[in-house]
Length: 305
Image 1 (cartoon, rainbow, N blue to C red):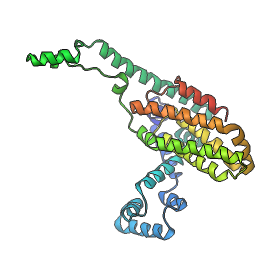
Image 2: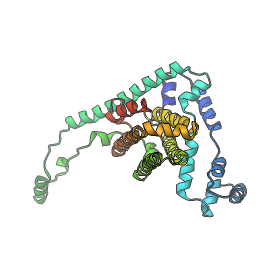
Image 3: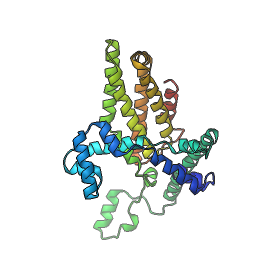
Image 4: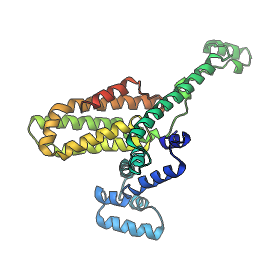
């Protein structure tokens, strides 16, 4: 259940409030055409031609560009995530529209996390209970094969063991986050941190490298927000704001920050990766809780940034 659905279900807000907030989110997201223009993936002439083709063919501008081999599928996916990353979080939107106060939002978010954790625990408990009451005897494969050779119907003895975690219904939305935060992406970000450390030691300019690292964390934030990973979303949003503020401080501010904080940022990335791997194993964020060791470590590290 998404946060907005939870708020309506608990009668904290009504359906009109939620629709108003969702409309506000959409209205304040940049258009794909603007992002295409700012990304420089295509020339201005090609973009204008694609817009004309979009109108004539009544299709999506990205489809026109892809058919003419002006843009790749990876670039299309990145543009989609960039667009989502600019979406104002629902909670923040509700505060902006004066539907909730900030203290109310923080209280409801805390209750929502507890609610999700309880649902997850109940599902696991139900699966474990079903396994405990399973009447089928546990016969090993060799014995089953012997029975089969004797002509005995072994269907009643077949093992139906189910991993409780795998039995939990996965949220497919997390695939957006899992696909973006690939091992290749993680290694790229670790390499950028390494380059920043070397550049700082050698008194080289840091702004371009730092900006690239900021964009990568920004995309992670967008993917977590789009995937409605409610425990990670506020953490990555806070991290995004912190890094953005450092970027705005100029070259000297970036240098001072990198001297003290880059090792912490590296540990944050490693904790994020551990959490990502946990979600990969059960194809869901249901196993992620506030009591998770990596999640607690992530919160502790974030306070040091």
